[in-house]
Image 1 (tube, helix red, strand yellow):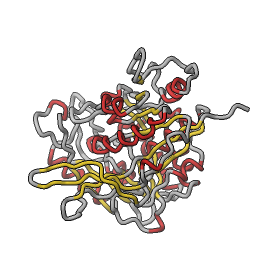
Image 2 (cartoon, one colour):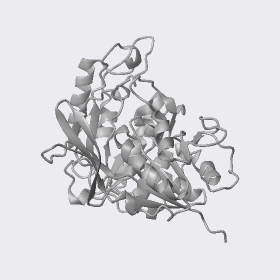
Image 3 (cartoon, helix red, strand yellow):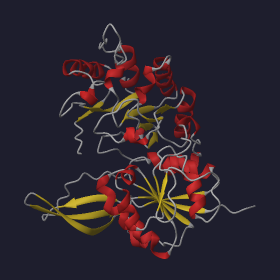
Image 4 (cartoon, one colour):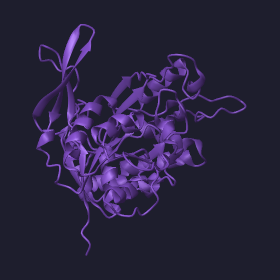
Length: 397
């Protein structure tokens, strides 16, 4: 029996920003369920590798790594968790690092530099890698994954391990050599993402979420990402650059993921999709949404929307611009299914983005006008969701 190649998958430490009085200006966000790691671990395991999670986010170690100034205030940058340099760079045949956020770029690059120090290949992916590729290559990455669907993962791991890739390389950037196509030749649909083993799901469970009070009977938290991409294009958002269109899981597949979370012990599920309602614009999509939400409740489980949902699609007109105009009346049945909470199961927490344009209207035609936005918020509150977090997203060019 051929031994499977080992891959060390890193969950990065947390970032702290301390002023001269020792106050951390960033809220510590540790203990969350590991959404993308669960998908990635399952993907690589199904491809015949032996991926192992190394979570650097949960220790008590702190280390300074830089400074920053904002106005007249000087800050010390600190990473918190486990000590990066304690990792043995030769412990695995190859390494994987993911980072979706610009604020963690320096920590990611510190980690990559250390892991690459003894010649083992380091493959790096995530949204920030797409945005700022050269920083990761300069840190020592062997290859960058630009494909967000998972299709590029197995071939690039074959390549860095010195094997003939099972498929022609695409959706990646190499530190050296001929560059493959930056777009994946064949996007992997979330419907076809391998289901996680219960053992993987258990590793990725969480114990908290952004300081929200969660009672013991709803812990631990699990996670699911039930679709990929988006049907709209907003100028503040990177998602359209993934070029995968909008790809949802079917109700049956979505509920399979929920059942595995339940088997792993999860009580409250982070539904991290912000385009869950993209289903609504296709024939039968509303019924799919209702089926999924009822199926979750039938499992005796609760959930929360951590990235918000597109509110216009929760109207009777589903956000579709018809000849007779748009019906922006809240769809009460749909809203109750998505945001309803009965004290035991249903929607425990909802993040609701303000969805307001700063300049112009061109890329915001799919968003609700202000008065209708307010009426939608009232309908969501009436559905009974226990906690609402209302936020403003500010995009920078």
